[in-house]
Length: 410
Ligand SMILES: Cc1ncc(COP(=O)(O)O)c(C=O)c1O
Image (cartoon, rainbow, N blue to C red; front, side, top):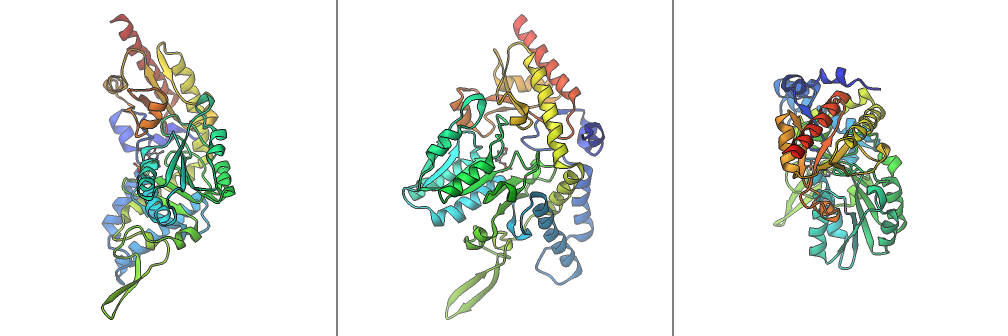
């Protein structure tokens, strides 16, 4: 089991600000090892990659390429060439929508998503479906905030081309059986894209074991810097796809013959990394992955299950507090949405902020889910990570009880 008190010592912001940081689903804090790796790069190795034969360019290229291997190992990809660095989960999903789906889907084809998707895994599909005359089918929930697997099976037809599903909901915390869903997709000849923004940082994720075709996630939610994210794609699929963006480095050669420009795309993953990439971001992400590997993802998950279980118990004791999401802590990740009777979620978050507790409020970029659940004003949301403690959960529940009491006596 990991020791959150030991881990906290690596996080300067947690040490210096004295804030109970429970907004980890939005972005995580960064350990000193990641901050140092970025500083070291800029201070000692900075150069552009793949464009120079000089020592600094070679060093930068090697470190950046090595970062792809580190990420490939972390998710058990077959090859580092299956790991494309992008800006974030959003860009990774848009890449698949515009590069894979745009060229392959036509009028009447079907895209299956779930009602619990983040806007990032909903709007790209809605947008391209509109352009192609394709249809987006949205699968709802069954009991206890779990995905309706019967409805999912029923939604699949011979016209289904892709199922795009979150591994873990960023609102309810619900963990979806993406292994089973990928198998269902393959049965009807579709592919499966997994939005791993809330799973890859928090539990072991093994793309070969899951059998998914694409996996998208963000570095900034897993101790890494902002501006770097990952698209994992099966190598044969990535090979067949056209580039998403065009420019430098994604092309091996560009011939100019008889007035015509003829490009030949670069090898994977560079074909999808046009222009100067976020080199320091990639190096920072690799350092974050190494940090998580040292702890062990099984231990990260065990800590969050334990903390979530404790939090569900403590928060359910607060009078007037409504909790959402699966009742079993093993069916959810460390995310707990809640509302307090008589107070809107934003005012609640502001009152917690006055007590130095950071939670998020609103729709969490998942407005369709809130509408589906009849939560018109949204929810407040606490989300945990490796450095959160039982003491912090106590502070949250005591503060909520105090606010509830204030409301009752007002
Ligand atoms: C499930 C899920 N998908 C996608 C995203 C989008 O991530 P990013 O803003 O890093 O692109 C988030 C971010 O909160 C998320 O939780």
